[in-house]
Image (cartoon, rainbow, N blue to C red):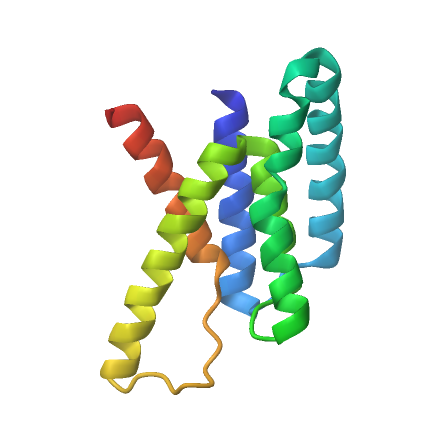
Length: 144
């Protein structure tokens, strides 16, 4: 429970930075990466059978990072934070959060474009949607 609350707070802080500044502080990202990686390695050492799943938890964020670097349409920090979310929350929670976030940002973008509030080239911060996706995933998980 404590890890989940910390993840909600950390993701919320990241989302706030992205929303306000359209960027995430490298220092904040580095400290978070060190903490999450330390916890992740500790988890792998404690439960060797989960090592494969823990490595797979990097895939969604890794793919987003590669796509961001190749296309320049997304920020690489978004992919790194998604990788850290996978390391922290696990593969299933990460994939559900990512799916909900992509659905949410698509709907909001469509509404904003239709209402002519944004243009095709407008950059919309992604991390607030990832935070919404993670919280929605937690609510869905507790209701089932």
